[in-house]
Length: 218
Length: 242
Image (cartoon, chains in turn yellow, cyan):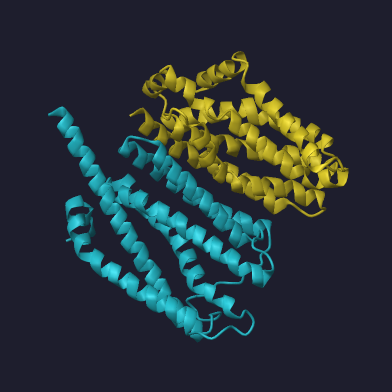
């Protein structure tokens, strides 16, 4: 399992896609918001948590179709299924590798971009924490979507249509756990539910995704 | 004699041959009675005036919108566990009906909301949940349309339906956490505490029965045509081989 993860990470790093692209996309989305709504810092501060979350979510979406597509095309996915590793384990490792190459950099970059959007300073810690806790759920759900669409020739748009609705609860509780703090309320319940959703996806999504992969490899 | 015998397509066809005319007749009867009674023979509400009559379309379609998804969940589970083709086809047949019902509920709600709340749309939890349900339906239908092999499509859509149900349910509560609502409480409930007035209650029940029969008729018709389409493609495949 660790070898598989190392391999995925190396592939992502060396093909020059992973880290850079989704981070750059995140930056561009955040940069476009002031162009769209105007540069007043009061408005920006109010929408900053939501914008950062939506930006992170969209950047996460961009690299989803790569999770299985390349391995499916060159046949290494078939080889992996014959390895003495349960399919669920493979899926979990793939999701983890996806998170390390997209979710983690986004999380680290978010407070800085929050500064650009004049997010109040109480929000820095929580945008970091909520993304750190929430983006793994995005990767796992995305892996499920990728597993469903892996056999399709043009699955990209369909993948977004399938995965985005699944992101709704994560987005709501993630953005709320920042917004509530900025507004000076307690965010304990929002943050705990966000964590619960993440743990729930870790526990169950690998089974659903593995099932979908087996169907596609049949 | 168990219910699973009707999972055999031939038995299913024979049974539905018998049921369909009755279901169709029932649909016409109940919908006509419910809607005509509702629209023309109920008093205007003292607050809402005649707009209250949208309830006879809105409540049944909203009920169906949710319950059709639930039926798809059950049939998906049946397909995954017992692999009855009729079950998968019924789920496929139900989805477009469900999405239409969701649209009807959203549309009639908007038409009613404009004079009553002063707005066609508000980001109220119930309204938002319906919008979310609509998106889930779209994804499900798009996935059916995208995959060519019927068994693969049935498998993947079933898995999607199950995962989607969990997350649609989660979204419902997430949305309630996120915003307080304008929408009134349930129009009907088991414990008679907060019912609509009797003058509206009985025609409403009749039109709900009408809508349910309408759904049953459509789902049976569509499942039958799916089965026939499947038979035709099997025949064509055999012809090509032979």
